[in-house]
Structures are given as structure tokens and as C-alpha cells.
Length: 458
Image 1: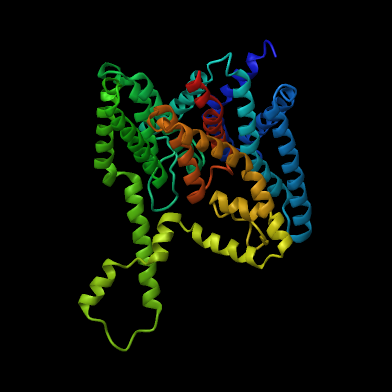
Image 2: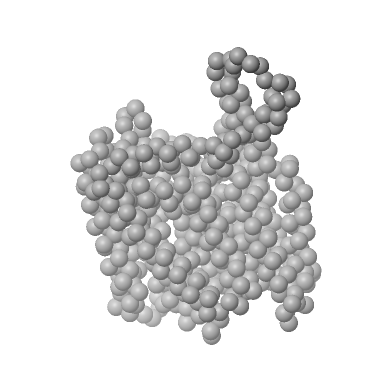
């Protein structure tokens, strides 16, 4: 198709305005009484746009045709899920169910759309450069707004009680944390690509700004993403010291090591570190209260023994609670519901949030893979995960054939972004059930699947 470059730039350019959409959504949520935000509307239209593009390129692209068949099959399944759960569940909030499934299918449509678009234009457009430019734009908007609002005292707080952290002018701290985590290694890649001497060290500034934002968010995810990104970069750069490119990476290696040292040194005063100990204090206080409410034992314990018990007051359940922030309680509830469900519901899924009641309104686990499995059932989950499996296995096969990619900064940083997204989705959620985050994951996965290895072969 000739003269359709605007489709590519429009489709990819949408990535750069995600933070602006998020801030507009925040304004609407805080100032307007509306159940439908501008973010939901715009992102839904973008998903429709991606679906239309699949139809437009269906004649030329076998992948587009397969994608259309797959999405029709998935849509039919979701229709069956909605129909059957409408019979099974009482009450059944169809609006919330449809809204949830709209979020669920977002990753599949955008990922497949990006794969088709990247494949079609890779020979005529520098996809990597344009994608990187839009990802960097999103990163800079987030970090500048975040730090600017902190300096002006207008930043929203990440937590309502006890814990500390800030989220700029963005509404959902969990989604913002996941977004920043995915963008961190991709922003760091700019420095790895551009810096060849200390005179160009300023290319590290976007990453540093985003890292500060990530740490000040106050979540364990934010701090962990900064550390992991720097560790991966440092390991790759150190390994390249033993190649013929060692003279080109010395500046980056020194800077990455220095930033790791600074991050490690400032961790004890970071919001995430303080919040972890606040959480521990809350768990210990709860445990002490529970112990006091128990009948006193006939034999009093020795003081030394009591002191020893206080030092190791947290058990395995408390550690799990510390890591998962009470998600394990909702997980246990959904597991129990799923175990009692008939085989048909196990296969088709229990819909949004399982069997909620008027007294117990819908509540997700906030661990994406579990939420998706229980909501979609065995059949639906396999359908949902199919594009991920195809992309993931293809990339792993290519890596097995060419292990030298482990020393390629671009491959490692994009892979780190994907690993972070998958890890966050498993532990903290708000990745595959949040379109605001999903689009970044889809872009990174489509790049590795379509562009990276083709570039190396060119």
C-alpha cells in the first residue's frame, strides 16, 4: 500500500501521548462524577483502530489474516463467557464484566496490530528509531511532570495511610509503577546507544530522571526496576570488556556502576525501604494484638525467650503478606471458589471477579495471571496467552540460534522490559488488565518479534 505512512506514524505515535491521557483521566476522576473516563474512550478507539488495520492489511499479510481469525475466536469465547455467567451469577453486573473483558483483550489486539504494522513498514521506515523516540517522549513527560509536581508540592500521594510515596498527577500508583518499570530499561538503552565517551554522559539524564521518579513512587516495584535495569546493563557492559568493542563502552560501564552504588547507598532512605519497614511494623503490631487476645499460658515464658521471639516475629504468612501486600488473601478466596465450581465453569471461567455479592462487591486479586485464569477458565486463558506464547517461543528459538544477542544492549534492554512486565503482572498486577500499561509491553514484544533479529540479519 502506497502513501500510507501516516498510518504507521499515527499508530506508533499514540504511545508518546499515553502520559497525557493518564493525566486527563486523573482530572476527570477527581473532578467529575463520571463512570467513563477519557482514557477508557480513547484507548478503546485505539483498539478499534488496531483491529481495522488488521482488516486493511489482511490481503497482504498472512499474519494479519491469522490474527483476525484468532480474535474472532477469542471474541466468540468471551461472548459465551458473558452469556453463561449471566445465567450462573447473581448478581451479575454486566457493565463491569464487559469493561473488564475490554481490558483483557487489549493486549492481544494491540500486540497483533503492532506486529502487522511493524512487519509491513520495516523495509521502508526506521521502526526502531521512531519507536524509541516515542517511548523516550513518554518517559520524559512522566519524569518531568513527576519531579515538577514534587518540587511544587502539587504531587498526589501514592498511599492514603501510613506509607509514603508520590505519583505526580497520575491517578493509579500501581499502573504508573508498572509503566515506569517497563520504560526504565528502554530509556537506559538511549544512553547505551549514544554514549561513547564521558563528554556525552548527558544522554543518561532521561534515565536518571525516570529512576528518581520510580524510586520516589514508594513501591518495591519501582526500586526493584531501577536496580534490575542497572544490573543488566552493567553485566552486559562488563562482558563486552572482553570483546573488541571494549573502548566504546568504558564510559557507560563507569556511569552504570556509579549509579548502582548511588542507588544502593540511598536505598535505606528511599520511600520503598521505609514503607517495607512500616509494613513490617504493622504486621508485628497485628501479631502482638492477636497474641494478647489469646488465653494466657499457665507457664510464663522466660524474658530471654520472649526477646528472641520478638526478633523473629514474622512467620512465612507474614513474609508472603509483605511481598504480596495482602493479595494472597484474595487469591486464597478465589482458589476456594474455583475449586467448588462445576467443570463447565472451570473450563469457561467465572467471569469478572468470580461470584461477587451485594455485600461483597467485585474485588480482583490484582495478580494478573491468576485474575485472568479464574475469569477466563482453562480454555479462555489458553486463548488469551496464545499470542504471548508464539512471540515468546519464537524469540527464545532465535536466541538459542544466536546466543551472541546476550551481549547486544538493545536485545537485553527490551528483554528486561518484558521480564519486568511479566514479573509485575504475576506479583503485583496492573499490567495485562491495564491498557495504560499494556501498550508499552505490546510495543516492546512486537519490536523483539519483528524488528530486532531482522535488523541483525540486514
